[in-house]
Length: 216
Image 1 (spheres, rainbow, N blue to C red):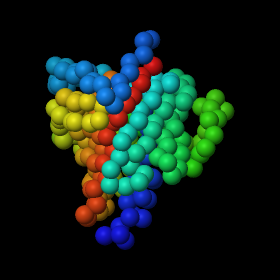
Image 2: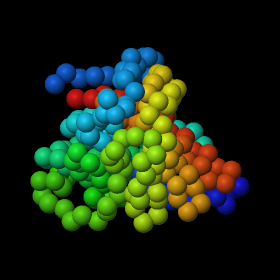
Image 3: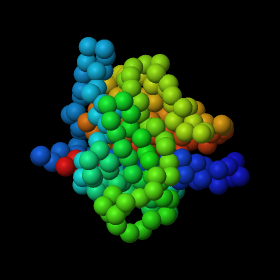
């Protein structure tokens, strides 16, 4: 299905490029021991940002399959208050995003798909051009929301078990993203971030899985 490749590239680049005391590290040969308790009404996540850490200097590396641009890196370059500037590079392009968070949601408010410098736009000021809600409370199965003009997101599990090159993760938050003619599943580990992403469209399957990370 070669004709579907451009479609996959566009979706991957424009819809899915995003993001994020002592330093916590894990290499691709290490088994990550982070296993939070399952989220429930008795053990809620404090905020959506618990699943999407935005500490300055935090880095993630993802191993990809199904597409040459499925592998990528993500780094939090700058922070200011409850805003964070994040750079993502997949070998074909480098993007800059700005995320903001509060107790109820984590939202991307700025996105530039081609940006190859490290200018601190939080300090210099920026004009919001996006309003994509990545995670939203309540953190419970069945919660759904319209993340942008094209996509509907829904929490489908709080106990997903995910295998990645970085190790095994339990009690992951699984989010289903439904688009016009594709479905994406994203898996998040509390206090780690995005663990895995699966993009499905027709007979195309593109996967990005955590290979290593460093939280500062």
